[in-house]
Length: 211
Image (tube, rainbow, N blue to C red; front, side, top):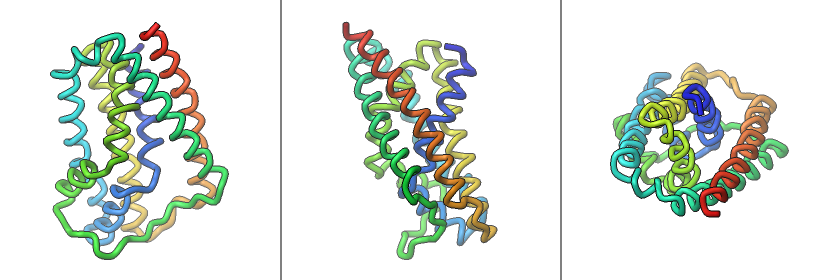
């Protein structure tokens, strides 16, 4: 797989997770109201540092374990099924009345934005599940191209977070609603269909390893 393909695939896949409301979005909105648009990149920087540590651990320490055919196959199948579940949820939202709320939440503990990005990400069960399944599957495939493949995957993945949360922070700080319900549902739909295709590929690849 070409490095640019890994990068673009990781970028789109990253968007599919980033656009879904969650703890990181809540913290980003609250900090943007207090600190301005710079809060978005700062919070994602903490998130990126945590994911860099995880990717490094996989590449440097867990790579030999993941390289086992049975492990690769299991991760691929489980990751594909998880992506299928994600795609179902995203497409259901896209066909419903989904809208991105840019309202803050009272009572969120105030931390340094970079530290907040690390803590919120690490304490989010969804983040752990994603990396244990779909994330591991993606990284495993990218790492077949060596360190350059893993780096391309990481850069594409984290760029999606920087782009999305920076845009959200700018919208909140500027007091403008850039994401109308129609635009938001359109983005969800595109990501949902992309994940469907990726889920099928992961399951197919996983089955080929365990045969």
